[in-house]
Image 1 (tube, rainbow, N blue to C red):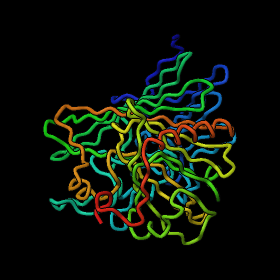
Image 2: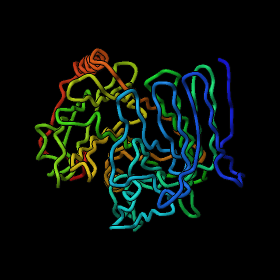
Image 3: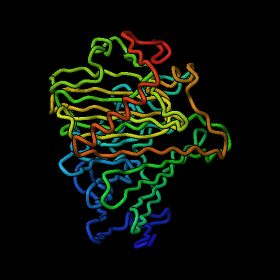
Length: 380
């Protein structure tokens, strides 16, 4: 492997912010810049183009990925929030603890690290806000490594406070020249001395072009159950999508997925109606044992979107997940590493191959679709 570039874009002792670069070689390019004006003022962006797949990472917003594209496949969605919002404009407590939504427009956004899921109150009276804080914490360290084999962007983010949790995220976002795939490898470390609870979910969001009437979300499952009575209304077509519908209220489904024997690996796919374009997630159930499907096929102007969401647990309020024994705890100094790959498929043959792979996994188990919420999943 020949290293072409190894750069520090942002260091903890920087006084000038993210280093501005514009690198090109062959078919690939990487550039960085800072957005100006309105709520996006001061948001740093690193754009990576491997010659086939391009995507924009936001170090200012927890190293989330704003948007991307691969050929004619658009990666992301048309949120009512039109530009990345600087964390300084986010009030977590807004509108009963759902202020996180005022910055929600990314293709890939992390939820966590200490808590994620629905807002509410913890057993000690702590107010828990929607999906936690990590998506609105700027990275304090960002570096770039480019070789003839890969483009790798790394970042470090701390979610810490006095008399509270002290968690650190080290992320590595990797793609290979000419590939339709990227891999996110995250390590979460408790940098404090006392044990700390830990939750992590990836909200991976798609609108048009993959999302349309007749699109399907496919996954090998042991169980699927609606989160609540609203989701139960759509259980007969829980993985099939319709056209945008003004006034549509979200429907959420909780899955237990099937893993490949001996590997722990599983996969989820969103394919378009014609079956010639798709996005596939691959990961280990030891990393993310819970999967959530979020359907929000509202009017286009209101956010026509679906979310594929691997997680350490389900996105219920933290007391529910603690009661069900799904909350993780990291001892002082302990780390937990996870990996997730996302690949775009651009032909009917590739989509059919992936669907056949899912079907082979499903053959191991007779999947059960529950018509009503299960207390095991949603605490209802």
